[in-house]
Image (cartoon, rainbow, N blue to C red; front, top):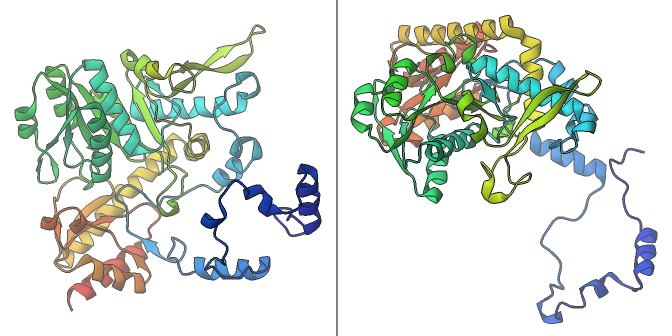
Length: 449
């Protein structure tokens, strides 16, 4: 049988009606007045057979552009990276893909260990003491960090760089509005956060200084300088980062960060038209009990065997709502597992090599564009993204590139009218030299029209 489910037959329906003592389905709606019931036919297509419907859906799906048919130079928060084949194999096992929050540790040891390993690897990457067992995504993780800082310092002002992902900034503002906190944006200087502007904005009411590393425009921020400024006023220093970049960059925890958040999507999680993702959240030891969500810890049982438990359960499903550190956080265990499997299979050496290739290939693309006469805006040290000035509508350029087999970079004019004709280009380790060269050629050909 090829059915993925067992369809209900007319005999099944008859037996169900007899079991509940009625003769027709309409009797189930007898409490609804006749005059408000819809008695016509819905304006939808006639039902098709399973095979006909499958063909139609495949035809529709094939109209989508995807990463198998087109080379992508689009980043801006969601990235096309190498995903080891073992990732899908492991997360497709039923004991993992059906698991959720491990409420009963005695029968959830596999799930708990997977979460524990995720926490451990995030701590090693970020240089922090403690990490929780994942958040929805990078944006909500950052907003939770801002709220933690306000609660810990009992202050109301959040300073956030204009070089933090624009969607992340909006999420922070949404969270802050409900708590009556003030969000102030720190201006930029050549694509990085202005140290001088930050100094001017600092006060004894600042709960947190938030910086992205690398920032939204691909630039590398001087975290140590910002940490010193924040700590001078006893504010918390919060860093939102790309975990792949930490394979080559100094971890934020080594540069004075109090809270480090980010999105694990670059490790083993496909782009999937924008989600789902897996946020991570790591803190210094002094903030451990303020962390949102839950912590999985390692212990031993009465026979001395290693075991795993929920060490800290600070979400509203576990404790009184008013005592919870957050009411908006979730397990994301399957995506956390995917990230863990990807990191494990790559290993420390592999993650570093992956990060180095991102730097090398992005800088190669920059060099090729410069040789074509293009301006690189905010030129300076980058990880895998840079801003290209095109001086033509990016929407039209994107359509041209699509026809040539490329997914263009992000149109920055959508964020700021001043950046009309500017494109955020992303080059990851999966892009080949041939793809980069052809992409540069096509952009150049269109620009010359």
